[in-house]
Amino acid sequence: MGFLTGKPNELIDQVDFGFEHVGQGEGTNDCLVKSAESYERRSGQGRTADKIRKVIGKTDDQLVTVNDMEKAGYKFKFVSDKNGAFVRMKNNQSAFHLQNHGDGTGHATLANRMQMLKSGDTGKIFYRLYTMDPASSQYTRTRISMFLFIIE
Image (cartoon, rainbow, N blue to C red; front, side, top):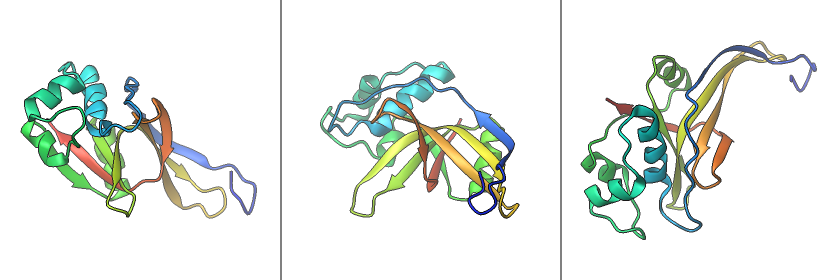
């Protein structure tokens, strides 16, 4: 809904992958591998977070990085452009979504649904992103920052 005019925002297009929820334990460093587990369930690869950690050589209490995921066979393309990310998702390319909290920490989720909308106030195009968030075990509307597209 447009804040100034009250006119509804118009949904132009959307993509929805329907990734399965995979939760992580409280206080764990599992967000990236749990997101990967959800991706692998849908793609048919089927590795669990534990199996991915075993391939990488990291224990349950160790942080898994993007470089570690490359050791597990993942290849990535960083994308920060919202429209470019939307186009890639429309072409059935999956992505992790990375958030930098600005204090040296971050969080990884799995981009699940992205909408292209037209503002009811200005007529400008904007995007909404919903991710499979392992920290909350639910789909979460997320402020868009950095996509890490999975190259198959």
